[in-house]
Image (cartoon, rainbow, N blue to C red; front, side, top):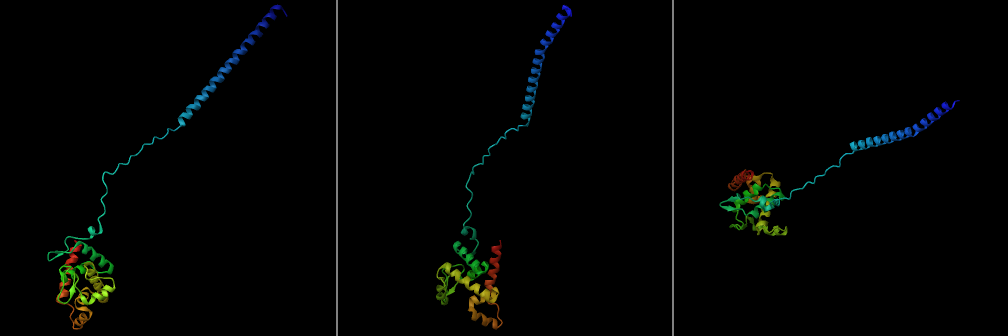
Length: 221
């Protein structure tokens, strides 16, 4: 081999060795670029998939500007200013008492009003020459046993309860309002004598039935 050829081969090997670092450097740069690109893509994907935190808005409930209206009392709800006869208004408290007694004993309120209307014209202090007392005109002969039942017929409330109790008993016994009224006015034995004679209406019972119809119509308004 000539000295010239030896020199050329040596130079070629040097050039080959010089290319090695360049190639390695290029590969490293490419790897770094690729890694950075992948990280950027992953970061972008993560950003795209991350949902924003919900924004919670507080809801302020307005404070009430006024106190709610109170429910009417029983007395306010039940008494009426048109329960009047002969210029006499049935006292509101007694209206409530009468309604409560009628509900307890199963008597139509209009019927109890009709009896009180005809018997006393809604006067709780009314008396008669035959010893009948109060709004419902309870005869003195009945006072003793009523007191034993805890009912005082000499008080307005007790007088109402006594009258409604009698009406309840007679309605149950005879099943007819006018017959119950006749028994209330004449006593059971007196009413039975009238029925036995064919009399089923009296002046008194007719008046009460007329007022019964009247008070029924008033209460329906």
